[in-house]
Length: 73
Image (cartoon, rainbow, N blue to C red; front, side, top):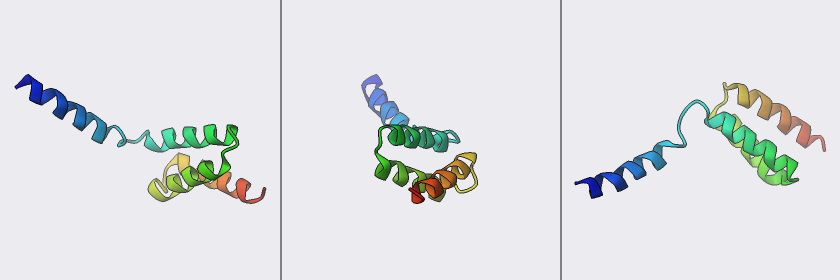
């Protein structure tokens, strides 16, 4: 039985790890990292995802500002 539980528990952990209130913050941090690495296309994609998936979050407010600034460059 324990052999069956371990893969199941791992699967559940992987499936649920992307959920939760901190996901927008994690995405924002990744987008900022991408900007520092001059990967603007991926940063922009991440900012857009944040705005679309978490429109009322503090991270979305920052993402909108970053998108506006990137559009001006």
